[in-house]
Amino acid sequence: MLRPRVPTNPLPTTTALTTNMELQPQPAQVICQHHAQAPATPARGGVRLTAGATVAAIGAGAIGVLVIGAVLVGMFLAISITAGSLAVVAVVTRSMLNSQSKR
Image (tube, rainbow, N blue to C red):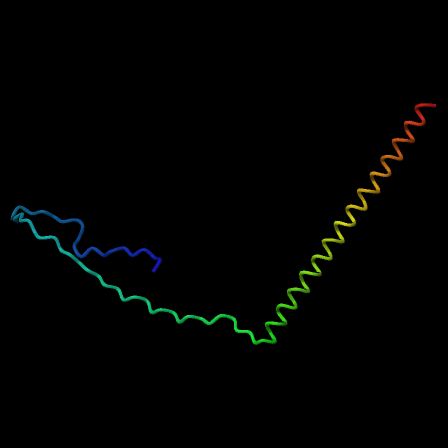
């Protein structure tokens, strides 16, 4: 269906003209090619789950969301604790440098 079809030429593309040949207009030939349509593929059924399988899939999805959420919250908490401790170290270092320059 998606491949291009090159029409076949029923007449030769080059003709040798002879002196005895009479040139008369000829009616154009119409060639109709009817192709059979491809048979329709049968519709596939969707995934069919029983009631227990549906509850199990929903439960597994909820547990997955909770686990991923807990991991992300833990990572954000670790980042915020690290940033806070670096801020405290920066303030202490600044105060120590300022106190040494005043003496």
